[in-house]
Image (cartoon, rainbow, N blue to C red; front, side, top):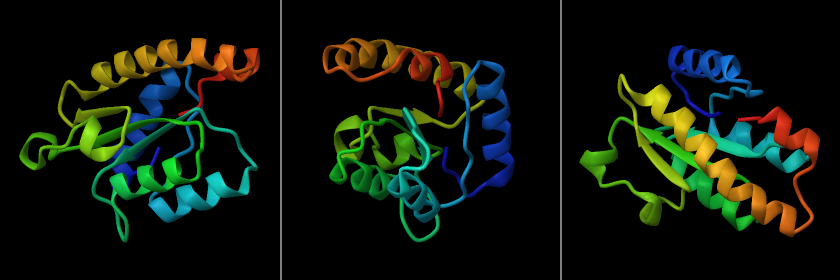
Length: 137
């Protein structure tokens, strides 16, 4: 999960961990790309804020797509409506508005995206049993 707002990042991390997700919290797109490129850790999901220092969340998602990393991507922003952000113009699998209802919506969205992804991974010989139990975000 990538967000430069440390309070929001830690709050979302705590809630996702309560729902069984393993979460790595990072404060910049560069830190996320560095971690993803090393291959030292495996991730299933990338959740990123839109406004980040140096690079936007959409640019981060574009980099992930360009590297053909098999991640489900979720873009969070307080500006979804104002900026017209959606799945088509951001490249994200889901775009969610930051709000007081964000957490339950995020949990539902992650579960839905994982259900859709699981049959594709199994058909391609991907997703191990361990990875599907761990649910890293």
